Structures are given as C-alpha cells and as structure tokens.
Image 1 (cartoon, rainbow, N blue to C red):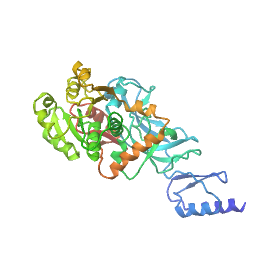
Image 2: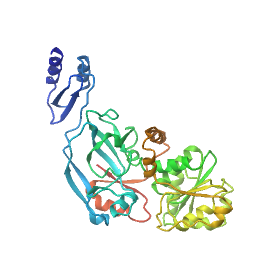
Image 3: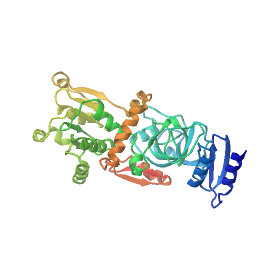
Image 4: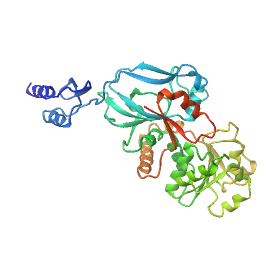
Length: 398
C-alpha cells in the first residue's frame, strides 16, 4: 500500500500544461495511470525507486485518425487514388502505433495501384510499400521496439502513404534515428536490392568491375555508391537525353567510374574503355530488351547478368554464343522474394541494414535526388513519378 501511495503522489505532482495524453504501464504493480503532460525523466527515475521497473508510454498527442492515400479499384493512379481520413484501431498487446515521417513513390507502388504487380493487396488498400515512421506507442507485450524508435517495414504491403498506422511489431524493424530522413525513407527497397545483387551472385573484390543499365535509377545510384565504397569499378549506362552531361557529372560525383550512353555499348570505343578497367564479372539489368543483350556481350567469361526490372517492357534476348562460348549465367532477383525467403533469419536482414546504415553514417551512401511533397499534393507527385527520364524520386513527407 505504501508503494502504491508513493507512486500516486508523484503522478499527482505533474503539472497539466498541454492537452497531451501520456500512458504509463506499470507492469510490476499491474496499474495503468493516464496523466496529462510528458513525464519528465526525474519522475521516471523516482518510479523505478519505488519498484516500477518496466514502463511503456506514448509521448505524442493521442492519434485517433489517419489521413491516407487509398485506392478501391485498380487503374490509372491519377483516377483511382484518393485522399481519405480513416479511424485508427486501438493499439493491441503486440502492435505499435507509428507516426509516418516520409514515404517514397517507387515504380512498384505505381504497378500495384495499376494492378500489374506480382503481388497485390486486398482492396481497398493504402498505397506505398516503403517509408520510415516513428513509434509513438507500444503494446504491453512488445519488447523489440520502444517509443521514439525509427522503423521501416520488413516487407511490402503495409501501405506507407499515410500519416499514421497501427502495425504488428513483428512487421517492422528499427533503423538509426540519426541518419537523414530521406535516406531512411528510401532504405528498404533500392539499397537492399543493390546490396544483395552485389553480394549474392559473384564474389566481387576491389578492382573488379560491374556494368549496369538504368544507372540513374534508385537502384543504380545505390549500386554506384556501394561499389565505390568497396573499390569496385562501375560502368554505368543511361539513355541519351538533353542533360546527359549534367547527369554524367552527378553520377561520377557519387563514385561512378564510367558513365556512357546506350549507343556506346555497340561501338568500338568499348575496347578502349576496357583498357582502363577489367571486363565486368557482373551485369545488372533493370531495362530489358536490346539494352540487356548488349550488357551480356561485355561480360567476361563465366560472368553473371542479374535482371531486377524491365522498364523497356521488352523480353531479354540471350545470344546462343554467350551461353555456349562464354558460359554466362542469366538470373533474376526480386528483393520482396528475398525478404520472404529469409524471413526466418532476421539476423541476415539486420546485418544488411547495419552495413547500409554504416555507409550512410560515413557519408558513403545517400538517398537519390528527391522531391519532397505533402500528401495533399499527391496528384502532382503521382504524375511526376510516371514521367519518362525521371531525375528525382517523389517522396511524401508527413
């Protein structure tokens, strides 16, 4: 009784200054107290002195609703995506309340809305598969996450184009809160795709070479920076465009060894290029069609081409001579499938994120060029994301 009275007296001393609800769950005493005002650290220390050793609380104003970009039918994103306000469910014992901070628009997000992606959520659905949020409340049984943690989805399908969400804690993984917001928001898809393709198909060492098309894409920019950090040469292919030189300079500033136009892949100048770096062991194809075929021609004997996208919407044609005389390997990669396959091994995912975040903290890996937009400007953002020759990624900032 004396312990309970001491805890009650301390919570009574907290002055009500703002209409903020702070929930304190005292598991040792099995009591729940709701008080107004953020609980100061000195009061938490005093609670521990009287035997309250495990507390869970929310330091944010109570969030009851969320604003989300939803679609109830598949089709043209400009026609089917709508901004709606919906009530949030209560936070269950194993769930957390997440305040979304930022979420990008990726090509796969557009394909999901259109209904053409390999996996589709049940309708109605909230758009977006990638992003970063801040935990503002945790369920009574959650131990892996705490209030204040930055988190990203472990897998696709959570719906990140929204201001808040109640999510099972097992579907999230924490990332450092001291990395740039846009780097955290774009961490879970493109850098992970680049990292796995550079790690899982060829044993690349410093001085080796990689060739890729779609070099200015989110994956392409991550490949450039990761290879540069590891001392691996990168040959980066982009389509011709009016601002080619400007783009080339930007990619070289990231660490690209060479930046060339697609037409150069078929020219004799490639022989001169390979006098300055070795023929590539690995080719990364995000385009398909003729571009992929030309990448194959420049692989060294026994090399591998990995296809992770098909922006040209054309099939990959493999010359018979490449298979017979050069013994090249042709494989595919989908980061969503990789995550599902390795869902039982969180340590592997954690290790990858730690290495990527280490590169970010060291200034060796940055987010692609981004345009920040609010949810209310979603029509403009979606239209921009679907334009050809995109130079920046559209990112919703909440």
